[in-house]
Image 1 (cartoon, rainbow, N blue to C red):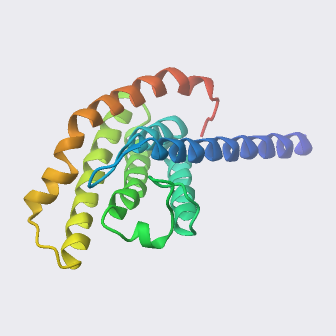
Image 2 (spheres, rainbow, N blue to C red):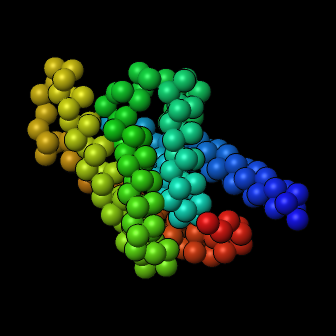
Length: 189
């Protein structure tokens, strides 16, 4: 009996690690699909939302942390096939670190308020707001520290406004797909 429980636990852990790896790869692939602008237009936020919606808060946050660690050590998983601390600490790095904040926020909300569809929707939307606020403040601070004079209004106009409508579509797609696919993953907490 104990042997069977150990085997089951090991199988579950292996399955969790495999799904985490798959979603790290999904985020990387979605980051490579890019339209260059001041803040590149990518499918990363779609993949980030899919990651936490599909894997849940704990595993999703782990996947986001693994992705960021890969980027930090120089693996070219970021937009434009880049990586490294220089990119992460640059003007757009706040959006990437903001993913981790989104994951933790989603995890906390769903842990305490429940994991029902409406709660997941509220959690991901609040997470996206937090992500954009965190990333835009970071962008403003790093950009102005480099000696360029911009206002917070400029930062919002460059980094938020052009992305609002595409973001709505990406989030609708992520939420719809995850609602249909998640039950088939069999990752119970």
